[in-house]
Each structure stands twice: as C-alpha cells, then as structure tokens.
Length: 455
Ligand SMILES: [Zn+2]
Image (cartoon, rainbow, N blue to C red; front, side, top):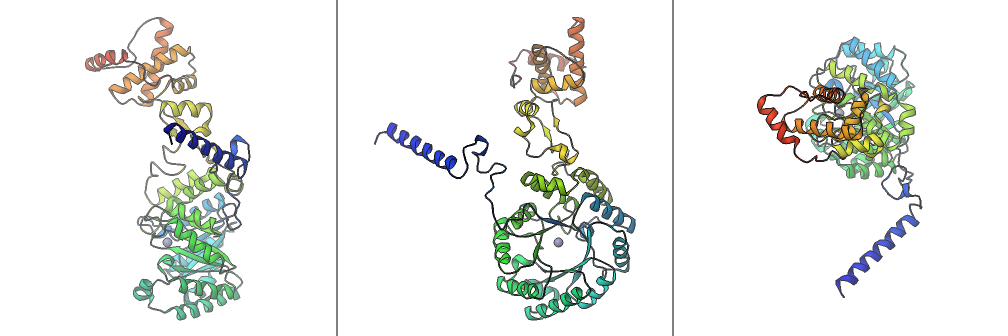
C-alpha cells in the first residue's frame, strides 16, 4: 500500500469517527462538539456534584493548624462569617478538649446561625454526653480503623468499635440531634472491616457515615471506587474529609461527589493538621466551574475574599500568590495574545468569572510580553485616545523598555502619558528617566522589529 493511500485511509477514518461522535452522543450544535465542554457531562445517577453540602471545619480542623489560636471572640467572628457565606454546617472542636472549648461551643450554639452547628468527638459515651449538653445540632463521631491506628492509637478491635459506635449513635439519636459516624484513616483500613462497620451503623439509623483520608494518601480514582462501593452498602448520607499532603484534596472531594458522597469537609484556605484539607475557596472554584447555577444560588461567593482575609489574619499567614480565586494572579493575564482574546471575550482564557466572587480581572500590560490591544485598553482607562498606529508605536516603546529593565504599572502609565504628550506637542521628550547606558540600549531596541505587538 502506498503512503498516499495510507493517508487517505487515515483521513477517511478520522472523518467517520468525527461524524460518529457528532451525530450520536453530542448532537450537531458546534458548541456541543467537545465532549469535555461545559454542559456535556454525561448524566450520572450517582453524582451529587449539583447538590452537595459543605461541613465547614475551620473551627475544628483549622484549630489544628500550626499557627491557629482562636479566642472566643475570633471564633464567633469566623462562625458568623461562615454563616453569611452560606455553609451548611459549622464543625467545632471537641468540647472535651478543654473547658474553654466547651464554653466556646455553647456560645456559638447560642448565636442562632442558619448553619447547623456540629461538634467532633471520639467514639466514647463520656464525650457524647458532654457534646450533647452544649446544645449542638449534631455530633460527629470518629474512630481510627486502620491496623496502625488500632495498634498505636486506641488499641481496640473491630467488634469493640462496632459495639461502642452503636451505643454512642443510639444515645445521640435519643437526644433528637444528628449523628455522623466516621472512621479515621479510612483509605488504609481493611475494606471488609470498613463496610461491615458502616453497614452496622447505617442499620441503627446514623444520619451520615464519614470517610476520612486523614493522612492524605488517597488518589481520585481510589476515592471514586471506595465511595461508589460504599454508596451501594449504606442508605444514609456520606461525608468525606480529604487531607492535601499529596495535592489531591480538591480532586478527591470532587470525585467523592461524583461517586455519590453528599457532604464535603472544608476549611478556609485549607488550614488544618499538617498542610491541611480541601480549601473552601478552591472547592468553590471547582464547583462553580461545574455547576454555576447551584453554587451561585446557594453560596454568597462575593464573601470569600473577606472570609479568607479574616482567617489569614487570625492565623498570621499571607494568601498564597496562586490561591484559587483570591491569589493575586488568579485573574491576571500577561501574554499579548491572551490579553487580546481576554479583552474581546474573557471566556477565551477564563472558566471562572471573577465578578461572581467580587473580584476583578487584570490584564498585565507592563511587560515585554504585552500587546497593543492591552496598551490600547489601558490608555482608554486613562482617558487617552490615539490612533491604532500610535497605540502600536507606544506599545513598541514599552516593550523595548521592558526588555531593558523591569517596569512597574506606574512606569507603563507614565510612558503612555509621556508618549501622548509628545504626540500632542510634536516634541520628542524622553518617555522615562533612563541612565546614559539604558538610553543607548533603548535606542538600539527601538530599531528592532516589533515582536508580538500585532497581537
Ligand atoms: Zn483532618
């Protein structure tokens, strides 16, 4: 067979498979031709990505963050801010941890928040009695089931765990409040042990079972498989808790929802034990990109920045530069061709609309990668109107200067203004203060071809 006929066969096959895809699964609308595009997700009866609930644990998991120390006033302030944001549940530190923890728990229960208040306890009747007496709406019971935890932590066997769990669950339910039973280090526990415990607590009417990746070892595929199996074993809700040691906390939460989990644990900025858990803002970014209607109607997304600032200040950390939504460069576009597209239609390079979170997009124009569309847009913001030829020439000069030394936004603004003044006056004044050496370099650079200014 000749090379040419090989190629024509390949072309033919490609055409046929494209036809198959577009004519069967995806319909004929051009917007639907990408199987991964928004709105094309195959409907999945297990998936809860459009109806999940948040259990916000900044005041429990977050208290275990290295820098965290929340006094009563700060806890109340954070609880109110979480409630305003719209989280479904707020989880608090075990009231048995200290007398102050118990008093704080009582104080937050009395605030009359819309969010339900939970506290987190060991699987023990003494803890359960104290927790119930604080006035919480629910109790989150937890015990380690991995062989390591059974050996080095509490030393109990599975039958003993099951018996104690049922006793605690029956007691909490008898007090008319919610109860969740979670294993700890679930992904390193024996699957048969896990399913047998979850099934036993489901049968006595627990409200939720919890799966916790306490050590951050799970991958999204493992999560999907475990939750899907569990979904077939219990009829109650499924809560999940993911640590971020290996960078999968958000992906794992998302996969858990796809497999039928109903509740996700989060903390603001992800603060928690070691490097923390699924961050509230990061989960919102993931979910708003998947189901904007649900997320935007349920949560007050524009509050996320203030909420993160409040917690960051309380634990004395900076918001990371690459943080979801609120990191300083989350909506910054730099390259000239990106800037042009963004100015024409932001969705070209953005899956999240910054305005949904009360944030603004920023087109970075003070760099050697800038393009004339970005400079034109910036000039117009400065109320300076020129011809396209002049915008292009001004851009060329900014790029030349940015090649010589880093220029700040203020510098770029000054150059645009100085260039505009020169046009109006017909003079040729220097655009910015340069050393003799820089001026010589600039003169050379100005003669070079324009690079990507056309973009
Ligand atoms: Zn944890």
